[in-house]
Length: 147
Image 1: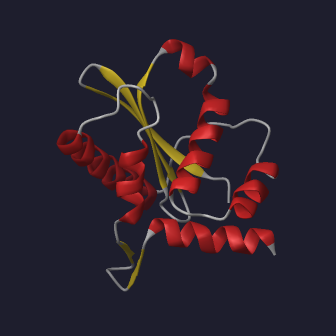
Image 2 (image 1 turned 90 degrees about the horizontal axis):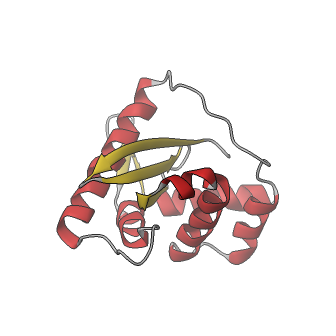
């Protein structure tokens, strides 16, 4: 439930961080990260995830349950699952598209419009046999967490 994949890259001379939830493919986007932000990465990501969940219309009690049970810190591992890497690359491609067409919001590191765009797209698995919206899938998992 707390497994996320991250892709860190440079776009237009600025740092772009795309986070994708492993189970639901829910996406959170940060653009314009600086060294000072990276030192305080965990709190920034926590707030960004909560904001993205609120933008997606997830109930506050579900967000609260998720935040209350989150780990105290995160760990980094190398991804060995090719499917997850391909899904993350697709999310980065969608983020590139929306930031390229709509631009980025310079007043905020969180690019909430890009995350919302990615989370409203229909994504498919198992050769297009199972299709869903990432925000709906995350909502289902959070409802299971509350129960």
